[in-house]
Length: 251
Ligand SMILES: [Zn+2]
Image (cartoon, rainbow, N blue to C red; front, top):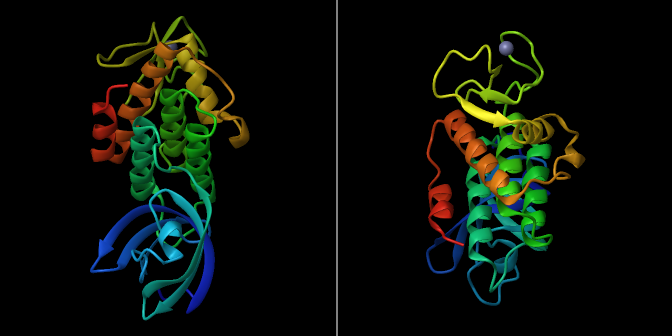
């Protein structure tokens, strides 16, 4: 933490919280200017604490930190956006917690990752305020996050013959490559019809502010979400407990 000032401010999303002792909280934040930061919030658990709400999971807040020999303490905190409250949809909440685990896995520490933060915040917005199809929001977040983390699939054309489109194209989950029906040799590739392929191309190649502007029917959105989930899990080379929990909830 040497490069951080002794006192500084930034905005950030609380992606993990842990109570420490009687009244303190240790939080992990995905911040705008410094990527992932861990900080103590002294007194955050006490009912009268103004810091309490601002340091709760899935709250986006403005923070002022004091850096004492590499340990960050939250000096002041005030909430900017609260995405979940009492009575929130459990399925949406569990998906939001999975987004936090993805951010924790892929976002850099003490280095800004502005687009990735924007992606997570936008997805939380669409999930809670706009009530978009949950599988679609999940798929958009997983695939675009993979792109931003350096795991972009190559969906331009068949990697062997360069063919742009056929009724069914095949996606390789291991390396993110695409091949056409005629070039398909390997087993275990994922068949994509035209609708799924164009949705994936949209998520990977559109400008950021367009990535949410398309639609799929429910069964196609579910299928897409299964593919993007398997892709990002393979790229991360780990299982996400929050994802297992999300998938265990029946709607
Ligand atoms: Zn081909």
